[in-house]
Image 1 (cartoon, rainbow, N blue to C red):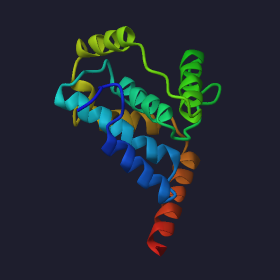
Image 2: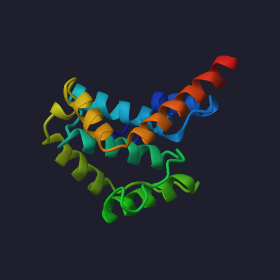
Image 3: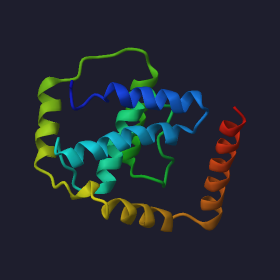
Image 4: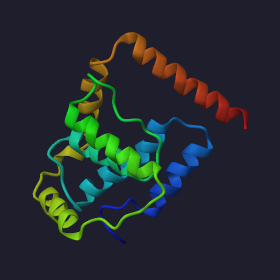
Amino acid sequence: MGSKHMPEEKTIVRARKDKREGKAPSTQAGEFVREEMEHIRKGVHGARSTKQAIAIGLSKARRAGVKLRPPQRGKASARTRRRAKLDYTKGQSGARKQPSTKRSYATLKALRREDHNAASHSALPRQARSSARRRSAAQRSAAAKRAAHTRAKSDQR
């Protein structure tokens, strides 16, 4: 099945399909988040929280070349922004460097010790609601309009 740190081929194929269809980078990245949730549910590893599971998926997406910009100042901590920037740069440059075996194994070992409730059927909507609560009505409306615009474009094909 390959490395647990690298995205699966089917995930990359789905993300590329989303890109061809003109979907937003966040939608493309959603495929990687979905893969991460599957890994947690299957018991490959765990996560401390749903937020961490999502972050792992977004990191994989950026490294795989999805044009998902790092968060702006004030939207995330400096540490998160820095990590996201590094992942984004790595994904946009064509160079592929072999990841450190010791480091990646240590990461996986730490994640294996974590709980598997982060991807439960109750944790995901709880995370979505708390995330939506932090957004204004205008932001939610704008997101819905963008989604409707994308759907309209795909219906024309």
